[in-house]
Length: 378
Image (tube, rainbow, N blue to C red):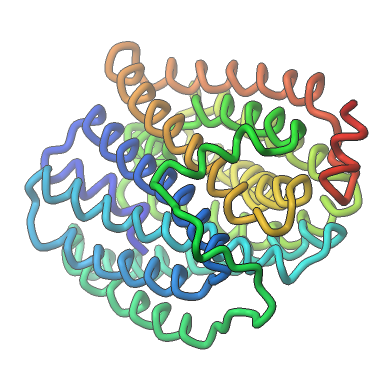
């Protein structure tokens, strides 16, 4: 409900493009680093649901906080609380999904999750668009309204139950950065894969910049939110079938197809000013997200030990958060110094480079176990 509204709201209360980039970078860094720690904590405790419940609770509380005060430091605090909630729940939630799948159905399970999650990102902005139609620029009320579905999410999370058979390591100490040790312990195929994913993340800035580009082209709030809804609708519709296809053609092939579409979108975004082409580009962007978002996690879970699933995904997320922080900050600086087109050109070129790296250095994860994957790599 709030994501496409937030950059517009921040601009109205005096946030510059650079400050928005820094805000998103810090917020995503908080989410990523906490994913690593709480993923490790979840694996050590053998429990999943408490992390999911607490994570949704913090994200829900952050919504009305955003509307209370318009001071930059308060906005940073509220946005950080939201992303901390995401960080707490993500590793445990993804481990639940992984436990319910086999290596042959990971793409389908994670694709279905992304599909249902994204349908929420269609319904929410649609309600926001309807509200703003009748009450233009009344952004703050939307933050209070968004508190309601958050409460529903918390209530629903209490229907989740941990599996009785878990490998608990409750006596193991879990310092905040203990998940970083996993990098040395992880299989080599995991490290090669994560290096490629992180290189891409380093230039993949927040979607806020895509929305700001649409706004800069002269589109009103209705059209900005409209293209975001359209993008999420495409994402939601194709995520599940693409996940099923990925199980057949391989996670690597599907992921590379997604990156190729991403590069096309960013190169085109650098020059486009036409409303209808924006809709076409956002549709391609939706397919890219469906081909990469859940797929990357499924790919990681297929090349790591089951007992370390939350740690493996969380460790990747921890490193990813640092790259995301740099990416959004870098994008804001490039935009400010050289204009929007330069931002999109740089990202497009970097993406093509990552595609070549993954093609050359990362073998297809055809093995169902870590030992087999390492055997193939040798």
